[in-house]
Image (cartoon, rainbow over all chains, first blue to last red; front, side, top):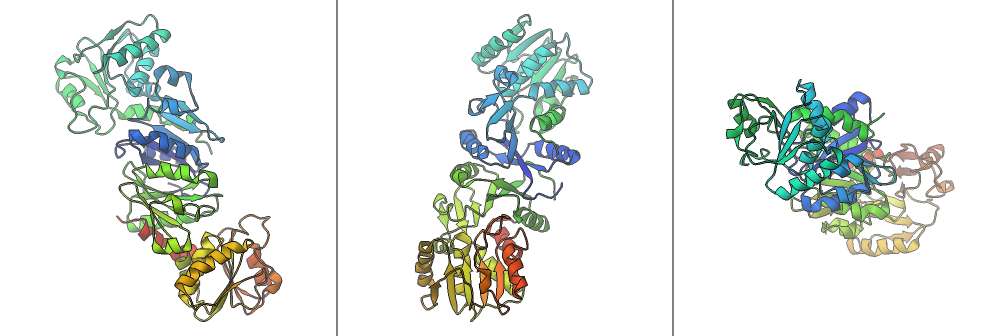
Length: 265
Length: 265
């Protein structure tokens, strides 16, 4: 990494927990490659403190912006001055840019990054059926990206069904012909199975779905980056499924994030 | 610098302007030498935003603390949960540590650093007469350190005389026998002449004192670090004075700061 001086622009990632984040490594590498005098640091921020921390960062003139991750992606939306159309529809943000006047602008790059990561691994989505566990910020972003990528139908399972119905209402505005179904914990009968919950981040988490419904013709994908092999991926591999870990989603969107955050020399 | 990960502890320097600060270079070097997984970044914070930014940093669990410099050293005192006895007497803070529970503790290391820097350059203070320009945070810290170092008398010049009287009232509690005098812009008749104002930071600043009063038997010292040679030091050198730049004050206190901020492996 280049030396940090009084001229260095500061970027952050906001998360809770924080130790598993990979964005500082990725974006500090990209900034070094691009010759940008900037640094990304990890800020451990509890959900209850998000508004306070954001107000502080808004007032820091050398602050360029932040990556936003669990548990802040949805909660941050009303705290920003402006969000993109995609972020508004998804109801979540995973990148915030600080403009020179202090305004904070949000964007969601999760979904595009997830699809780009699948494609880079050789997995095409057009015409495939998809099962999604979760209806939070990341799940919303992935649902919209799966619809855009042309899946044949989409099933969403979430502990709180109301959040799924809310997601479907917004999805129908963008993709009125896409068959949508409220799912159960059973992922059987779908080509693609995606965990977009945070279950698997902690060692004692429950599985996000019932692994008995997994079969060898399925591709099982994660959004969790650490551990790289979650209990779900272990179960899926044991049942003969192809698996796709969480890291490619971040890899897929690092360049998109750097562009959005204005990381230019 | 070592790679920044989700485990890295974040430190900051708060200043306005920011580009001239040298603490990130110094403390990132010390942390690397000590094997500390931490990083110091420059936060450009206007005076009016200090309370907001501090409230935000207090809520960041991976934030370890900050170096505080112009213009925040005095204003920050009432915003902290606890300050050292030295900082209370000086009425200023230049280092803030964040405790695990979020409490912010302030310390002042300017004065000790300034005296350590002079001594490292071979300048003894015991029995010497001293002239100090300024009565802000740094000037207060240096006045207390000069009194502790045993100067024979201390003259302080400041645009606002009320601030000097306030400083003297507090100094007398610590050093009741030290002769104190309210100065004019003329530094004549003192062995040591110190600029502890921020005049000289910007190219169009006025001089902090009248250089016509400088003579070859005087040592003229700066607290400004960039530019290394301020207009005052140029004038002093032209008049045959020995000069002492601002950087050694920081060098003198970098290790003290690292210790106070808990920069241990």
